[in-house]
Length: 77
Image (cartoon, rainbow, N blue to C red; front, side, top):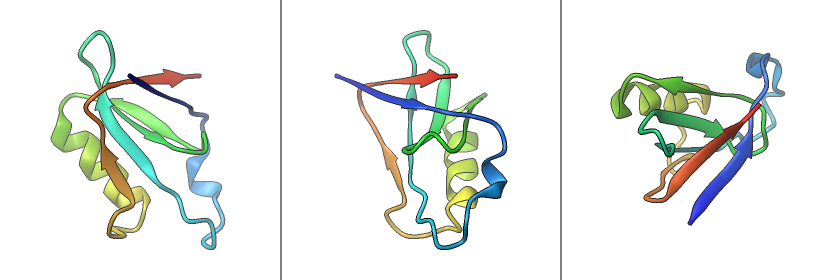
């Protein structure tokens, strides 16, 4: 099962009231991705730890704001 989300640049412009959430996982080529669930940001990372750190920072370290998925993640630009 795949998780699909889109990403665009300028993720820092989100309103503080917007409760951003991320999914972290690997794509079909083994790259680690962190993708905001509403297409507000995301990226490709060297390893799982870097993807998790980015997602946690972008969500203000909110509990349950980052979900690690076992299926493949797709980053649509």
